[in-house]
Length: 106
Ligand SMILES: [Zn+2]
Image 1 (cartoon, rainbow, N blue to C red):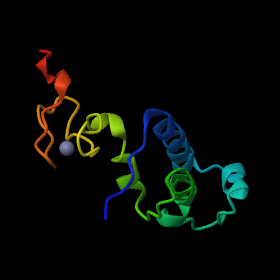
Image 2: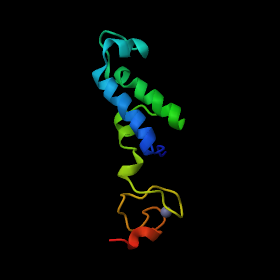
Image 3: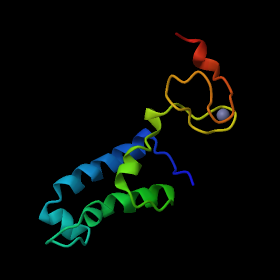
Image 4: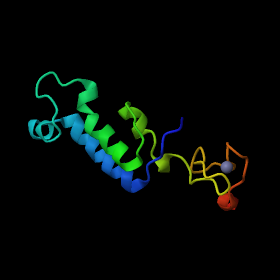
């Protein structure tokens, strides 16, 4: 099962929520219906998981995994199979072997 990737705009939304979750002031917890006492790790980052699900319709339980699904840390989607290239500088697609046409730069 592959997780949907976030584009830069979505990632910005998610990372802002992530930052807020890390701070988790009282107002934030009230806004997101989180417990004020003994906030567990899962509860603390639940707003982020909720937002991710809202953006991608994919249910994820690990907020760290979400942070790793930023499109720009991988390359553009492959022209052939649409899977993201492993890195922005990948010279071929790991999934189908297609060589990106712009890799002639450098
Ligand atoms: Zn491909």
